[in-house]
Image (cartoon, rainbow, N blue to C red):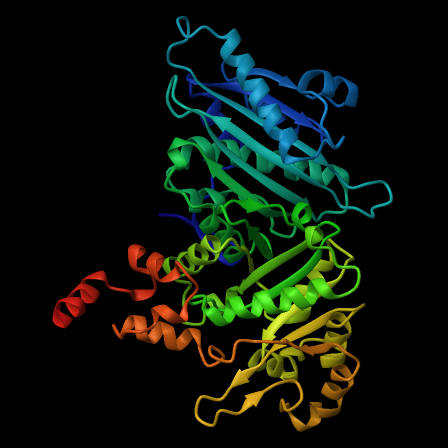
Length: 488
């Protein structure tokens, strides 16, 4: 079988854009509408040029004028047009028109779709490169229920015409994937970049919904975006849906906690609660304008070798059950996390971390790729008034408690550490619970795997029940039942 090499990936031979379009156009049952706003009708153009479009395209439209667009789709409360809400209105409105106007009696075998996008390409000053929402609402069988794939893109090209062409290619890949790859969403994701270089466009949010995707967990799809290099970070909310970072973080104060959360323990939650209280007490911090992000890095997920998706889902399920917002990132260094948040907000930021994490921050080997080394990294990390909230660590053997006052870094970093410490950039978390400071995720994980008792009380309320009911982190319900039987 022929193999084509695309960057670092190997795929089966990739069909051309024209061949993808022809396969759709020549399918006598696929029939739908194209509604494209903001970057020309670049997707539907491929369908007209390929031939055989008369049986596929019900209508192609582009309501460029804002007043005309409002007359069709309604006025948005925030007055914005490049939003997910606007896209969903477009998809629903156009699909309703198809159903109202096409007789099922006359066309009993048609499967309907609506493709839509609302985008803003690069401005004349080339200050903002542009972004947009792209989606498809479609059936896979006549009179079947509708499914949706909705994604958000960020342009990286510096020319509006090139951005339009890239958007047109992406649109074809999405429509083709919806009809011919919907049974394998992971592959569908990868195929969105057919004939597109990853430095041309970024997909930072995607959500699948509908009956054919009922077994698809959008948190796992988030992971695929980062794993495949389509974006550097994704965020999902407690319900498990991907959320647009720009919408979530815009003008917000941000407190981030990095960890393995394998599993999340009482220590993790104590770190969160204590540092948040201190963060909110700081000047100019409003709780309603504050987002707390639990971050897991891709390098952490790869700590045991290849990414274990089941293991990842265990962490995600626990954090979401605790009502937390989770970010998956490709950021090994902390300063890159701060840079990422800075793209969306200029408000206050805080990082909550344990002693070992702070020691790693002062390890120069992490910054060899920077021309300015650790000083350049720290200039980015401690910009403005960012603070590190440090959680104390208790040595289980000696009982010694390590705080910012007696923390030991490499001798060459000692003076640099003192500078940040005594300028208020590193703050000890107050009133931590001394009874749990010696609880470590890796020890809990070992106890679960080896069937030891007593790990349940080390976790937040409800977490142990979820682990047992879903057999997470190697927990074996049969082994547990045998142990209970022996006690009886």
